[in-house]
Length: 98
Image: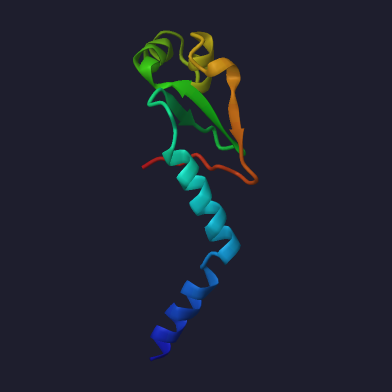
């Protein structure tokens, strides 16, 4: 019984507020309406998402193979980054793998 109560406390502590949930649902609804399959995203772990042209990912990868660096700089080098357009977030967007 104590374990179940502890789990319930953890779940309650980690729950989103109604306002947070409504904001996230509205954001997801807007993202679902993206008019293009061409817009793709990347992060370097700051508070923004960079954009790149998904149709040019092979070119970006080739630029990385040729000159090294990071995905963001490779996309920029071949002008596949939509002129550096970024989406800014109110908090960090951590870069993780796996």
